[in-house]
Amino acid sequence: MRKCRKEDLHLVEHVLDSAAQEYADKANVESPEIIVDNQVYLPPGPSHHNSHDIYCSGGVVLASRDGKIVCENTLDARLDVVFRKKLPEIRKQLFGQVVA
Image (tube, rainbow, N blue to C red; front, side, top):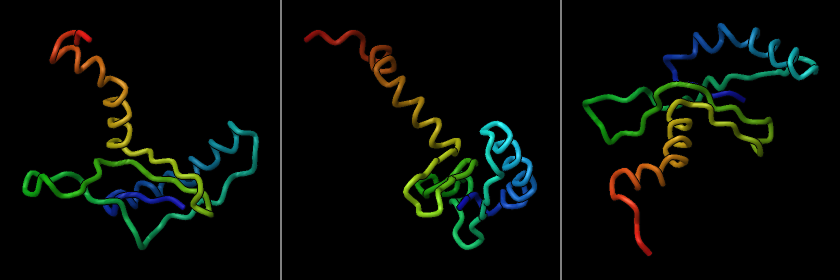
């Protein structure tokens, strides 16, 4: 199952077959069946009108058929990973070395 923003649906459907084939070639497996969820979408992009609303800057969320494996490959999720990884460095830059 694959989810995307409603405004990105056409793009996702356009690259779906080539992405599945590229995966199959690299993993040396048969091309996977990929179903795009046409009922539930990721939230729309951020808006300056409602800055506290839930948003998604783009990307896709992939899940296995049973939902046990989920890969959130959105820009927002990737930025969150980088932020968490760099948080100690950011704290040091902002507040200096903490003495225990």
